[in-house]
Length: 324
View 1 (cartoon, rainbow, N blue to C red):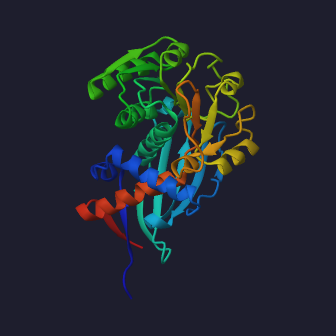
View 2 (view 1 turned 60 degrees about the vertical axis):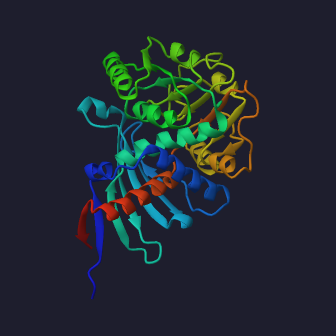
View 3 (view 1 turned 45 degrees about the vertical axis):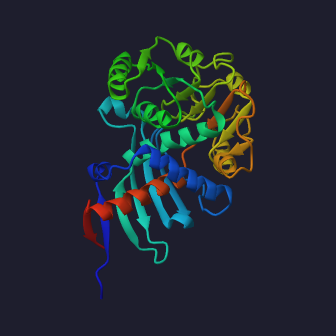
């Protein structure tokens, strides 16, 4: 009887594969086109919530065109920084779609960071102005870093305005991003300064079920694009009401989260990212529109990225084979 094996990829292994963000954006665009044509399976993610505002979610997805099937088991604990631990932790399991057997287990934290920012960049491709040059980052953590990298792939970003409630995190971010990307990075003292000055705004704090939002109406300039990766935690209902074109990455999951108590005072999306990529709904129509993609984070993005990591790891002999 043949011995079945799976490939284990640690965080270091996943990073060693060297998958670039431009390729991740391309893979996500392919996956969302398949979604827009109704050729993927992405059920709403169930989860458990051991502590207030903490979650552990199961995120399955199947993309036939990529032969990608699997699940991500991901946790988000907002208070982990007090323990010097990351907010997001994750494991991804890939399965053979023909047999159901697991073929890989890999760290999912790096993939989560990169695919989230790549999804924002993809949404911005359809909803932001192509000449967007200034970027506002609210939350100078992992996502704040990943989004600069991803958005610079598609946009001529020249200046970043950065804000964080922890001054030391903001100061470190300014130095690191300026050195890494060679662009001007300006630390600001209030969220308003970052939002008002930016063509693209990304809010990247913890996801809170009962937030105390800070972004007020009138802050987001005409013609700007915003993408919250922390749900509506930063945005007041009045600020959301000013959005002219409000989309999400998956309308079914948006409705599911609304049933769970999120987005109680937010608009109903006119389209999701699959609709935009497949050309079934229009993106930005005029230069002056305020646009937003309320991306929730889909397993579709994880599987599209993880299958590419797996294939490249096999080609390069990276990882450890384990018996089943």
